[in-house]
Length: 337
Image (tube, rainbow, N blue to C red; front, top):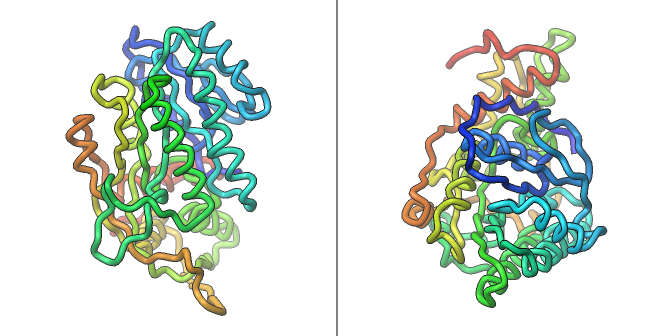
Protein backbone atom coordinates (compact mmCIF):
# COMPACT_ATOMS: atom_id res chain seq x y z
CA UNK A 1 0.00 0.00 0.00
CA UNK A 2 1.36 3.38 -0.94
CA UNK A 3 1.76 5.81 1.92
CA UNK A 4 1.65 9.57 2.29
CA UNK A 5 4.97 10.72 3.71
CA UNK A 6 7.64 9.19 5.88
CA UNK A 7 8.49 8.97 9.54
CA UNK A 8 11.28 11.06 10.97
CA UNK A 9 13.98 9.55 13.15
CA UNK A 10 13.18 10.19 16.83
CA UNK A 11 15.44 12.09 19.17
CA UNK A 12 18.20 10.19 20.92
CA UNK A 13 16.71 7.57 23.24
CA UNK A 14 17.45 6.60 26.80
CA UNK A 15 18.72 3.04 27.08
CA UNK A 16 17.97 -0.10 29.02
CA UNK A 17 14.17 -0.38 28.69
CA UNK A 18 14.27 -3.76 26.95
CA UNK A 19 13.70 -5.15 23.49
CA UNK A 20 10.25 -5.01 21.85
CA UNK A 21 9.16 -7.02 18.81
CA UNK A 22 6.86 -4.97 16.58
CA UNK A 23 4.83 -7.05 14.13
CA UNK A 24 3.83 -5.04 11.07
CA UNK A 25 6.55 -2.53 11.89
CA UNK A 26 6.81 -1.24 8.33
CA UNK A 27 3.16 -0.13 8.21
CA UNK A 28 1.77 3.28 9.10
CA UNK A 29 0.92 2.62 12.76
CA UNK A 30 3.76 0.13 13.27
CA UNK A 31 6.39 2.67 12.26
CA UNK A 32 4.91 5.31 14.55
CA UNK A 33 4.84 2.83 17.44
CA UNK A 34 8.42 1.80 16.77
CA UNK A 35 9.55 5.42 16.87
CA UNK A 36 7.82 5.95 20.22
CA UNK A 37 9.38 2.79 21.63
CA UNK A 38 12.78 4.00 20.49
CA UNK A 39 12.25 7.34 22.22
CA UNK A 40 11.23 5.50 25.39
CA UNK A 41 14.54 3.63 25.40
CA UNK A 42 13.44 0.30 23.93
CA UNK A 43 15.35 -1.61 21.27
CA UNK A 44 13.04 -2.20 18.30
CA UNK A 45 13.04 -5.51 16.45
CA UNK A 46 10.87 -4.93 13.39
CA UNK A 47 9.05 -7.95 11.93
CA UNK A 48 7.18 -7.80 8.63
CA UNK A 49 6.83 -9.64 5.35
CA UNK A 50 8.73 -6.96 3.44
CA UNK A 51 11.28 -4.39 4.72
CA UNK A 52 9.98 -1.40 2.74
CA UNK A 53 11.23 1.95 4.02
CA UNK A 54 12.16 1.93 7.69
CA UNK A 55 14.65 3.57 10.04
CA UNK A 56 18.18 2.26 9.53
CA UNK A 57 18.73 1.99 13.28
CA UNK A 58 16.04 -0.70 13.72
CA UNK A 59 16.86 -4.37 13.41
CA UNK A 60 14.66 -6.15 10.89
CA UNK A 61 13.51 -9.77 10.65
CA UNK A 62 11.49 -10.79 7.56
CA UNK A 63 8.61 -13.08 8.47
CA UNK A 64 5.18 -14.02 7.20
CA UNK A 65 3.58 -15.12 10.44
CA UNK A 66 0.66 -16.88 8.77
CA UNK A 67 2.71 -18.75 6.16
CA UNK A 68 5.71 -19.46 8.40
CA UNK A 69 3.59 -20.70 11.29
CA UNK A 70 3.96 -20.08 15.03
CA UNK A 71 7.26 -21.97 15.32
CA UNK A 72 9.21 -19.24 13.52
CA UNK A 73 7.97 -16.60 15.96
CA UNK A 74 8.51 -18.89 18.96
CA UNK A 75 12.14 -19.36 17.94
CA UNK A 76 12.54 -15.61 17.46
CA UNK A 77 11.13 -14.89 20.93
CA UNK A 78 13.31 -17.55 22.54
CA UNK A 79 16.35 -16.07 20.81
CA UNK A 80 15.61 -12.38 21.38
CA UNK A 81 13.83 -12.55 24.78
CA UNK A 82 11.75 -9.38 24.28
CA UNK A 83 9.88 -7.70 27.11
CA UNK A 84 6.87 -7.19 24.83
CA UNK A 85 5.35 -7.91 21.43
CA UNK A 86 3.21 -5.29 19.71
CA UNK A 87 0.86 -6.59 17.03
CA UNK A 88 0.50 -3.71 14.59
CA UNK A 89 0.02 -6.12 11.69
CA UNK A 90 -3.34 -6.60 10.04
CA UNK A 91 -5.48 -5.71 7.07
CA UNK A 92 -7.67 -2.65 6.66
CA UNK A 93 -8.11 -2.21 2.92
CA UNK A 94 -8.22 -5.80 1.62
CA UNK A 95 -10.76 -6.16 -1.21
CA UNK A 96 -11.70 -9.66 -0.02
CA UNK A 97 -13.07 -11.12 3.18
CA UNK A 98 -10.44 -13.88 2.95
CA UNK A 99 -7.68 -11.28 3.13
CA UNK A 100 -9.24 -9.83 6.25
CA UNK A 101 -9.58 -13.25 7.89
CA UNK A 102 -6.01 -14.17 7.07
CA UNK A 103 -4.39 -11.02 8.42
CA UNK A 104 -6.75 -10.05 11.24
CA UNK A 105 -7.77 -13.43 12.68
CA UNK A 106 -5.47 -16.23 11.50
CA UNK A 107 -2.38 -14.13 12.13
CA UNK A 108 -3.53 -13.57 15.72
CA UNK A 109 -4.08 -17.31 16.19
CA UNK A 110 -0.50 -17.97 15.02
CA UNK A 111 0.79 -15.27 17.35
CA UNK A 112 -1.06 -16.63 20.38
CA UNK A 113 0.21 -20.16 19.68
CA UNK A 114 3.77 -18.84 19.67
CA UNK A 115 3.35 -16.81 22.85
CA UNK A 116 1.74 -19.72 24.71
CA UNK A 117 5.02 -21.67 24.66
CA UNK A 118 7.43 -18.73 24.83
CA UNK A 119 9.75 -18.51 27.81
CA UNK A 120 9.98 -15.97 29.28
CA UNK A 121 6.55 -14.74 28.25
CA UNK A 122 6.48 -11.15 26.91
CA UNK A 123 3.47 -8.90 27.20
CA UNK A 124 1.36 -8.66 24.06
CA UNK A 125 -0.18 -5.34 23.03
CA UNK A 126 -2.85 -6.16 20.47
CA UNK A 127 -3.98 -3.25 18.31
CA UNK A 128 -7.68 -3.57 17.64
CA UNK A 129 -10.25 -1.11 16.30
CA UNK A 130 -13.29 0.81 17.51
CA UNK A 131 -14.98 -0.63 14.42
CA UNK A 132 -15.33 -3.82 16.47
CA UNK A 133 -18.33 -2.14 18.12
CA UNK A 134 -21.82 -1.71 16.73
CA UNK A 135 -22.47 1.66 15.07
CA UNK A 136 -24.04 4.00 17.63
CA UNK A 137 -26.93 6.44 17.19
CA UNK A 138 -26.04 10.10 16.94
CA UNK A 139 -24.92 11.45 20.30
CA UNK A 140 -24.17 8.05 21.88
CA UNK A 141 -20.53 7.57 22.80
CA UNK A 142 -18.61 4.34 22.38
CA UNK A 143 -17.32 2.81 25.59
CA UNK A 144 -15.66 -0.52 26.34
CA UNK A 145 -19.10 -1.87 27.30
CA UNK A 146 -20.76 -0.86 24.02
CA UNK A 147 -22.29 -3.73 22.00
CA UNK A 148 -19.76 -5.65 19.93
CA UNK A 149 -21.74 -6.00 16.71
CA UNK A 150 -19.51 -4.85 13.83
CA UNK A 151 -21.10 -4.38 10.43
CA UNK A 152 -18.02 -4.75 8.19
CA UNK A 153 -15.63 -7.61 7.40
CA UNK A 154 -12.86 -5.48 8.86
CA UNK A 155 -14.69 -4.98 12.15
CA UNK A 156 -15.76 -8.62 12.38
CA UNK A 157 -12.30 -10.04 11.77
CA UNK A 158 -10.66 -7.55 14.15
CA UNK A 159 -13.22 -8.52 16.81
CA UNK A 160 -12.44 -12.20 16.28
CA UNK A 161 -8.78 -11.43 16.86
CA UNK A 162 -9.51 -9.44 20.03
CA UNK A 163 -11.72 -12.21 21.41
CA UNK A 164 -9.00 -14.79 20.72
CA UNK A 165 -6.53 -12.67 22.71
CA UNK A 166 -8.93 -12.24 25.63
CA UNK A 167 -9.68 -15.99 25.74
CA UNK A 168 -5.95 -16.66 25.92
CA UNK A 169 -5.66 -14.20 28.80
CA UNK A 170 -8.47 -16.00 30.65
CA UNK A 171 -6.68 -19.33 30.13
CA UNK A 172 -3.45 -17.86 31.46
CA UNK A 173 -1.49 -18.60 28.29
CA UNK A 174 -0.74 -14.97 27.46
CA UNK A 175 -0.30 -11.62 29.20
CA UNK A 176 -2.02 -9.13 26.90
CA UNK A 177 -3.73 -5.77 26.53
CA UNK A 178 -6.14 -4.93 23.69
CA UNK A 179 -6.16 -1.33 22.50
CA UNK A 180 -9.06 -0.39 20.24
CA UNK A 181 -7.95 2.50 18.06
CA UNK A 182 -10.13 5.10 16.40
CA UNK A 183 -9.22 6.70 13.05
CA UNK A 184 -5.46 7.26 13.22
CA UNK A 185 -3.94 10.27 11.42
CA UNK A 186 -0.33 11.48 11.16
CA UNK A 187 2.86 11.31 9.13
CA UNK A 188 2.63 8.33 6.77
CA UNK A 189 -1.17 8.22 6.64
CA UNK A 190 -2.08 5.65 3.97
CA UNK A 191 -2.87 7.03 0.54
CA UNK A 192 -6.01 4.89 0.44
CA UNK A 193 -7.57 6.71 3.41
CA UNK A 194 -9.75 9.80 2.94
CA UNK A 195 -7.16 12.37 4.04
CA UNK A 196 -4.43 10.44 2.27
CA UNK A 197 -6.42 10.69 -0.96
CA UNK A 198 -6.93 14.42 -0.46
CA UNK A 199 -3.21 15.03 0.18
CA UNK A 200 -2.28 12.98 -2.88
CA UNK A 201 -4.64 14.94 -5.12
CA UNK A 202 -3.35 18.26 -3.81
CA UNK A 203 0.21 17.19 -4.58
CA UNK A 204 -0.45 15.46 -7.90
CA UNK A 205 -2.42 18.40 -9.31
CA UNK A 206 0.05 21.07 -8.21
CA UNK A 207 2.49 20.62 -11.10
CA UNK A 208 0.57 22.63 -13.70
CA UNK A 209 -0.13 25.53 -11.33
CA UNK A 210 -3.90 25.29 -11.69
CA UNK A 211 -6.25 24.75 -8.70
CA UNK A 212 -6.38 21.11 -7.71
CA UNK A 213 -9.60 19.20 -8.27
CA UNK A 214 -10.06 17.32 -5.00
CA UNK A 215 -12.68 14.65 -5.57
CA UNK A 216 -14.09 12.85 -2.54
CA UNK A 217 -17.11 10.81 -1.52
CA UNK A 218 -19.89 12.78 0.18
CA UNK A 219 -18.51 14.34 3.37
CA UNK A 220 -21.36 13.71 5.77
CA UNK A 221 -19.78 11.75 8.64
CA UNK A 222 -18.58 12.73 12.10
CA UNK A 223 -15.65 10.69 13.37
CA UNK A 224 -13.09 10.49 16.15
CA UNK A 225 -9.64 11.15 14.68
CA UNK A 226 -6.67 10.34 16.91
CA UNK A 227 -3.08 11.43 16.39
CA UNK A 228 -0.60 8.64 15.63
CA UNK A 229 1.76 9.98 18.28
CA UNK A 230 -0.95 9.75 20.93
CA UNK A 231 -1.63 6.16 19.87
CA UNK A 232 2.06 5.35 20.15
CA UNK A 233 2.28 6.78 23.67
CA UNK A 234 -0.66 4.58 24.65
CA UNK A 235 1.15 1.50 23.32
CA UNK A 236 4.25 2.32 25.35
CA UNK A 237 2.11 2.74 28.47
CA UNK A 238 0.23 -0.50 27.79
CA UNK A 239 3.39 -2.59 27.69
CA UNK A 240 4.78 -0.95 30.84
CA UNK A 241 1.81 -0.65 33.23
CA UNK A 242 1.63 -3.92 35.22
CA UNK A 243 -2.10 -3.69 35.93
CA UNK A 244 -3.09 -3.24 32.29
CA UNK A 245 -3.06 -6.95 31.50
CA UNK A 246 -6.43 -8.33 30.46
CA UNK A 247 -7.96 -4.94 29.72
CA UNK A 248 -9.68 -3.72 26.56
CA UNK A 249 -9.11 0.03 26.23
CA UNK A 250 -10.33 2.56 23.69
CA UNK A 251 -7.61 4.83 22.33
CA UNK A 252 -9.04 7.90 20.64
CA UNK A 253 -9.09 11.68 20.84
CA UNK A 254 -12.23 11.70 22.95
CA UNK A 255 -13.76 14.28 20.62
CA UNK A 256 -15.88 14.10 17.48
CA UNK A 257 -14.90 15.92 14.30
CA UNK A 258 -16.79 16.38 11.06
CA UNK A 259 -14.82 14.88 8.19
CA UNK A 260 -15.50 17.99 6.08
CA UNK A 261 -13.70 20.09 8.70
CA UNK A 262 -10.69 17.77 8.51
CA UNK A 263 -10.61 17.94 4.70
CA UNK A 264 -10.98 21.73 4.75
CA UNK A 265 -8.20 21.98 7.33
CA UNK A 266 -5.86 19.88 5.17
CA UNK A 267 -6.55 22.01 2.09
CA UNK A 268 -5.98 25.20 4.09
CA UNK A 269 -2.73 23.98 5.63
CA UNK A 270 -1.46 22.87 2.23
CA UNK A 271 -1.64 26.44 0.95
CA UNK A 272 -2.68 25.01 -2.43
CA UNK A 273 -5.60 26.46 -4.39
CA UNK A 274 -8.18 23.72 -4.67
CA UNK A 275 -11.76 23.02 -5.62
CA UNK A 276 -13.51 20.40 -3.52
CA UNK A 277 -15.87 18.15 -5.49
CA UNK A 278 -18.07 15.62 -3.73
CA UNK A 279 -18.84 12.72 -6.04
CA UNK A 280 -22.48 11.83 -6.59
CA UNK A 281 -23.38 8.46 -5.10
CA UNK A 282 -26.08 6.63 -7.04
CA UNK A 283 -28.31 4.11 -5.31
CA UNK A 284 -29.05 3.35 -1.65
CA UNK A 285 -26.44 3.92 1.01
CA UNK A 286 -24.65 0.80 2.31
CA UNK A 287 -26.16 -0.78 5.39
CA UNK A 288 -22.76 -0.53 7.05
CA UNK A 289 -22.61 3.24 6.66
CA UNK A 290 -22.83 5.28 9.83
CA UNK A 291 -22.58 9.04 10.17
CA UNK A 292 -21.59 9.34 13.82
CA UNK A 293 -18.72 8.25 16.02
CA UNK A 294 -17.44 9.57 19.33
CA UNK A 295 -15.27 7.50 21.65
CA UNK A 296 -14.94 7.66 25.42
CA UNK A 297 -11.31 7.32 26.62
CA UNK A 298 -11.82 7.54 30.38
CA UNK A 299 -10.83 3.89 30.92
CA UNK A 300 -7.46 4.44 29.25
CA UNK A 301 -6.91 7.48 31.47
CA UNK A 302 -7.62 5.40 34.56
CA UNK A 303 -5.71 2.24 33.67
CA UNK A 304 -2.76 3.63 31.72
CA UNK A 305 -2.49 7.17 33.03
CA UNK A 306 -2.71 8.18 29.36
CA UNK A 307 -4.67 10.91 27.67
CA UNK A 308 -4.68 12.38 24.17
CA UNK A 309 -2.60 15.54 23.81
CA UNK A 310 -2.57 16.47 20.16
CA UNK A 311 -5.16 18.42 18.20
CA UNK A 312 -6.67 17.86 14.74
CA UNK A 313 -4.39 20.61 13.48
CA UNK A 314 -1.33 18.78 14.86
CA UNK A 315 -2.17 15.51 13.12
CA UNK A 316 -3.10 17.14 9.81
CA UNK A 317 0.05 19.28 9.83
CA UNK A 318 2.14 16.13 10.36
CA UNK A 319 0.32 14.38 7.53
CA UNK A 320 0.81 17.27 5.10
CA UNK A 321 4.42 18.01 6.00
CA UNK A 322 5.44 14.37 5.52
CA UNK A 323 3.37 14.04 2.34
CA UNK A 324 4.95 17.14 0.78
CA UNK A 325 8.45 16.00 1.68
CA UNK A 326 7.79 12.52 0.35
CA UNK A 327 6.51 14.04 -2.88
CA UNK A 328 9.70 16.05 -3.25
CA UNK A 329 8.18 19.38 -2.34
CA UNK A 330 8.01 21.36 0.84
CA UNK A 331 5.35 22.28 3.37
CA UNK A 332 7.20 25.48 4.19
CA UNK A 333 5.15 28.59 3.59
CA UNK A 334 1.84 26.80 3.99
CA UNK A 335 -1.10 29.14 4.40
CA UNK A 336 -2.37 29.74 7.94
CA UNK A 337 -6.06 30.31 8.62
